[in-house]
Length: 389
Image 1 (cartoon, rainbow, N blue to C red):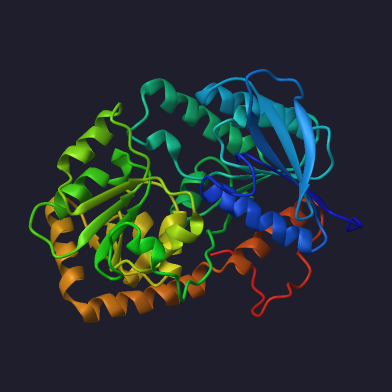
Image 2 (image 1 turned 30 degrees about the vertical axis):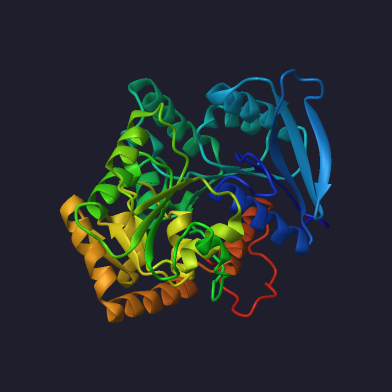
């Protein structure tokens, strides 16, 4: 029998309101969606302090319970401390636990011992990323296995991730639910001009500055010849990190390096007014930034791999190395018809596969499933759909 008020706890993010990345944005969207549909929703929020004086405190935002957890550690240790304290607290509260990411999945065994119902979004195949050393890869590999077996249900955001998870658990335990994005049909030009840019006269990359995301090859490709446009590379840069220093060294005067921008309205405007969106990710599943580029109608220049091809399809042209990347950039700068066709394909792909309403309803269905309810109530949206892709 369906409970009068179903309850869900969201773990694994730094918290909401969203200010950090894709998981935080998703947590915020899902929490607001479920509260509007009658759920009691709690979201765990990390609070870094010098000294813990109140381990857990409750707050409320837009009808959502914000469960603030204090941690006095720094760096990766703080994340593990936060994950453990969240699990300890969640084990004492009613409701389904939705865990975003498996990096601290070893702690999920406690939730199972305490008879909590657990859904885990397994994110990407973190242990395959070349940036990690042997110890980190081993940790991620072990936690992937633990997360796969400690969870009642697994969510993959991409068919290839689902195929990978099927080597750990029966496919019947896995649902494929992508990421969502809102259509962007207009945006102010002020954030663009504030960086000395002209709308439609620049390419943009929005990603962490790391080898997995091909940032250095993208910059080198752009600077390999004279361009009449600029390249904007959004992302935190530190000269203490050799890869970041190499990116700065490779950049010429036409490369704009504004660092990380956390004003989402500004990021949206910069993406919307770009001539093309550069996506160099080589590993992972459905990347939120790529989905948002499709929803903004961007032509995409993407690294050629199965992850990106499934997401972007005909909305992108693809590169494999620095030379082919330089050639694709030139195509984008010269061929107006190609840019228009890719932009139209992008909007179509986003509308058909990455609507927030479908994604959020699919997660609600997963939560109801663990509560013993076959499916969610009919959604008050214009096209009811189970949302799994």
